[in-house]
Length: 190
Image 1 (cartoon, helix red, strand yellow):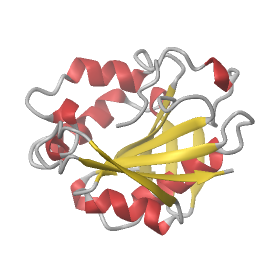
Image 2 (cartoon, rainbow, N blue to C red):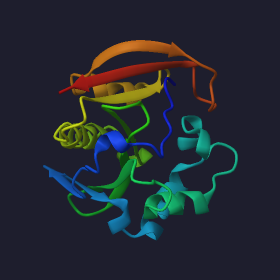
Image 3 (cartoon, rainbow, N blue to C red):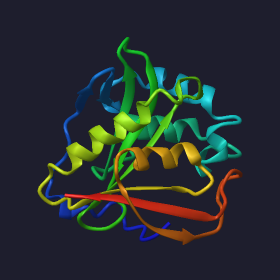
């Protein structure tokens, strides 16, 4: 999936980071370090089999709950990844969205998942919009990217709706059962 830069070396960010709370109509994003890890894990646990295991290599064939807890608590992120719990207007946790510094200097990648019973309601799109806007306020960030497998049509809808530019297709070995082996790369620049 392109340049997998050392996640521990994000000095180019200059210590900058996005806000820990982001809001738009009908959606709130809270840094996962400020949300009950148990509550997020419960939602995640319900999504693994038959859904996330199709697209996420870490969810296929032996999900490591302890690793997920460390990530959500912020311990495993090393100041290079910011994860947010996605809440609806009632405060219900419906997914997670992240900004990740793994594409090299000047670029942050957006990742997201929304629980299967809330898909199609625009939460991933609104979360990605909030994260893109916040990321592009950082002085060292020139673009935000979304990478997904070509077979993941729900993920493809998000950058398309937000006006991201599809810049390339990358062949690669599938790493999860639902994948086609082609990654689509989209971005939005400052």
